[in-house]
Amino acid sequence: MRYNLIRKMDISNGPGVRVSIFMQGCHFHCKNCFNPETWNFEGGKEFTDETIEKVLELSNKESVKGLSILGGEPMHPNNIEGTTKLAKAFKEKYPNKNIWTWSGFKFEELKDKEPLKYIDVLVDGNYKDELHDPTLKWRGSSNQRVIDVQESLKNGEIKLFVKDK
Image (cartoon, rainbow, N blue to C red; front, side, top):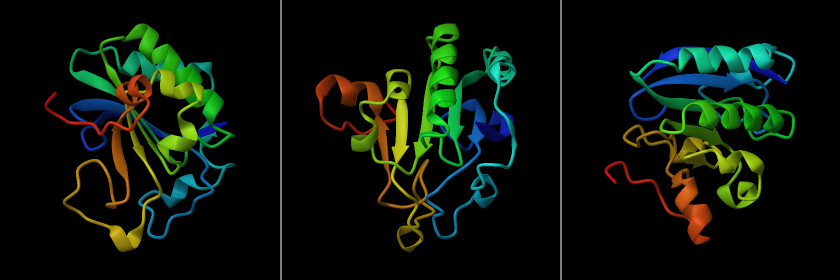
């Protein structure tokens, strides 16, 4: 597994100041993707235990509210094991910080996958250029959903994330 980039102070991918990691490799290839450099599964850098330690270390600031895991495609079979390991380690170390993840897969396809045990918010669905709306928060197109994962898993139905809860 590989990753493309780690941002130590990201304010555009979820609420507050966050650490973000962009996984490498995506098979969706959405038209006008904002991150096509992450498509190639052979690109980027090797994802190792040291990568996880670096993310955890960067997150060890009170100003950092959470971790964002993007791509590429963090839930692709090539990446899901590393995504799981990272999300689990993050939640164990920072149980009061949140994890946001973006995936072209739908929640319904992922609900039984291990990473969802640790993820707080999932922005799901492929980016659709014809549904692009720059006024949307945390997503690029109107078909994508911002899902409260833990509430959805608990209730057995999709619960959208509401910022002021």
